[in-house]
Length: 441
Image 1 (cartoon, rainbow, N blue to C red):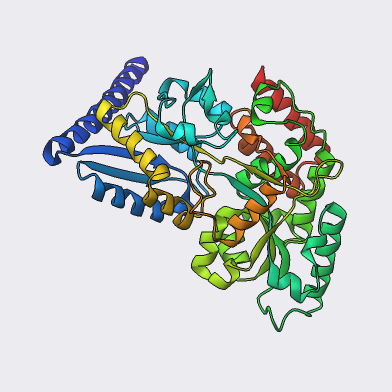
Image 2: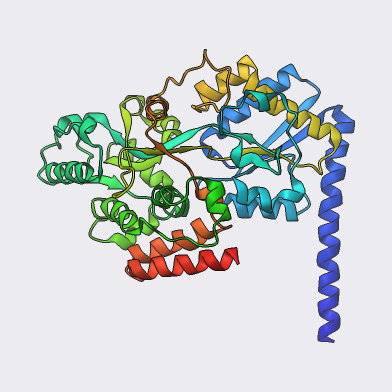
C-alpha cells in the first residue's frame, strides 16, 4: 500500500512537471501567434541595473516592434545560481541568463549557445573573453569590467586629516583606520558628520562579499587567473594570515566591533544604503557598482567616493581586484526565433550608440569592449577603477574558478562561524582546504 502511494505521488509530480513544461511552451507560442511578436525571456542577477535594463529593453522594442523582452531579476541577497537551476528544472527555461567563469561554463555546457561568430566578439578587449571561452569557442558576453576595494568617503577622510594617497600598504591602512576610529569615538567629527558611528560596515550576511570578494584578494596572489584556480586540485591559502588581517580589520572597526557575531546579520542594503550612503560609516568593501545606489539616496555623497587598495601583506599591497563579474549566455535549446532575437538584443545593447549610452551612463558599467571612446565613465567610482587599471595596480578575479559553491556556501559560511566565535581561523583554513580538495576529486 505504501509503495503504491509513493508511485501514485511520483506519477502526479511527473504529470505536474510535464504540464508546467508544456504550458510554458504553449503560452509563449500562443503569445507569439496572438501578437505576432517573438518573446525573449531574460533571467539576470544584477539588481543594481534592474530598472535601467527594463528601460533599455523598452527602447529596443521601440526599434524592433516584432520583439518582446521579458526581464526577471534575482540577485542581491538571493542565491542567483540556485534560482537559475530551479528555473531550468521547472521547464520554464530563459532565453538569456548569466554565467560566471570556467566553473559555470562547465556546469552549464549542455545549455550554452556558441556565440563565437557574434559581432561583439571581435570588439572585446584583450583578455576579457578568457572566462567565457571553452575549447576555443566563445559562449558568453562579458557584462563589463568591475573593480572593488575599500570604497571610502573622501570628505570624512579630509575632515579627519587623513591623506588617502599615502595609504599604499596594510600598515598605512591600519594606521588610517585607527586614527579615524579614534576621532569618531572622541566626537571630533560629530558636528560635520552627525550620523557617523564607525569606520567600517562589513556585510558578512552576504557570503559573496566574504567568501568570494574578500577571499579573492588573497587567493588572487596564489592563482594567477580563474583558469588556474579552476584547474587546481588544492588550495594552499598561502596568504591566509593576510586574509585574516583584512577580515579582522573590517570586523573590529565596524559598528559591531565588540559583538562580531552580529555582522552575520548585516546585508548589502545595511552596508550600502543604510551605511555608506547616509554617512553612518566611512568605508565599505564594495566596488564601482554601488555608485548608482548611493546616488539615488545622496548624489553628493556618491560623487565624493573613491577606492582604497585592499592590501595583502607579503604580496601586492597597492592594488584592487579588477575583472569581469558575470556574462550573458543564451540558451541553445530555445527556439530559433527567440535565439536570433536574444543575440540581436545583446548586440544592440553593447554596440549601438543608444545601447552604449545605457551601458556607461545608466548602468555605470566600465565597458569590456572597444568602440566606447565617446562614452568614458563619468561616475566617481568608475573613474577610480579606471585609474587603478591604467596604473597597472590590479589583481585578477579568480573566484570564478572556485569549485561550485565553495566560495559562498563553504568559505563564506566558515567566515560567518569565525566571526561568531564558533570556529578558529586555523579550523577555517583546514576545513576550507579539505572541502576544496573534495570538490575537485
